[in-house]
Length: 203
Image 1: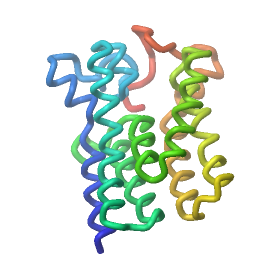
Image 2: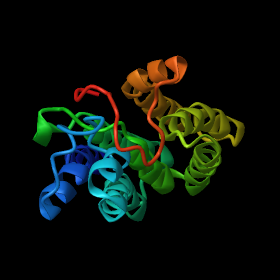
Image 3: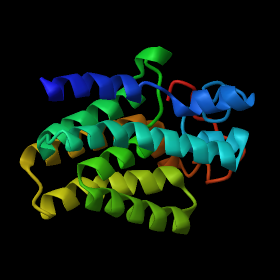
């Protein structure tokens, strides 16, 4: 019963879009209507600057982390924690408060992983950082880290349901990055810090 309640709470918390809230607070344009159209930290960086992007990144990470930490404090097993993290991630992608048009989920995934099992989050961030530093492509970094993280979870011997929850989040993240994947193949993907992007607002 406790896990079920926290799953609902996690989804609702995940549905709070940090990008939209931050941009409204500082008087910046709605990130769904400018830049790539994605309400996430990378697009906020393009349209509102580094401080706003940092606040967005922190907010999106915390909404993945906090409900999982609450579940951990209540003594829930790791599989339940993974389900709670998945619910927060799903809320970010499909937020009930914003017409189910959410972000692509990288920061919320990192927060959820940090709560579920911190080595998974460290692995994801390390891969993301290396690829992003070399390529200057946030989407390529996210895709690479996402593909490798479930394999790392399996290699480290985490429970099967936990690995499946991580895999489910990764599959959804890759789906949300499908336009970026096409752009990477075409060589037209925007680089980190770029002021323009042609991603459709629905992505």
